[in-house]
Length: 249
Image 1 (cartoon, rainbow, N blue to C red):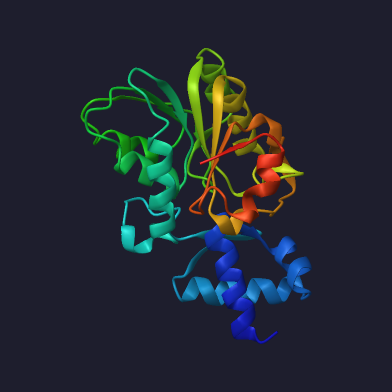
Image 2: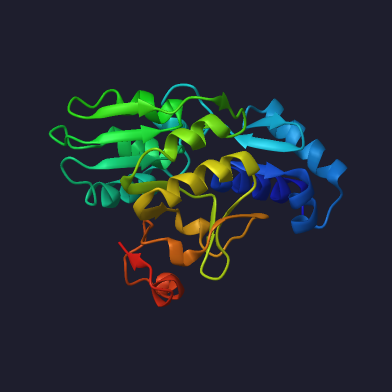
């Protein structure tokens, strides 16, 4: 693989999963971690990724303001967000995680919808605050620099005091056998608490994230009630999830 091809692959992985680890990329691409670190340094110098200890973060995911031009696969994420909006009903209490797809969901909410949204994500909360008819509750605690959301015992304790109608979950990896997985232990604990305290769980995922697996489990696939991608519901790539009892939108 040429250097340019390798860096293109790395950039795609960062944009799909929001975060990559040097160790994982080294195994996947069959090169040394030093080579991956040099690639990430070059991509960082080109302002294409945010270099952090042990890996890199997506620029679009970690921007402090919502710039649509910087969002990876915005058109597809808008399709996903539009499908998710159809699940929202008047008077609902909804958990919303972080991520650019959830931020897009917040942006396109119907103005007349009156609902209560709990989120540990500051960027999602800011976008929700522009909605005229809904209440927004930001769950506070230590902020994960990698994920841009509040984490820790205080957040989990607050979530355990609430019962939500829906949990709308941004996903980094999803697989019909392995379920939803991620690479950030503290974020996973928050997502687990959201799932456990919601009547229905909605997983939002680009088609590129289907059949991908990371090191740590968020939940089994049978804990997901709805899977929403940009694909048509009858797309054959979604059949394994449907066979597991997940409703495809």
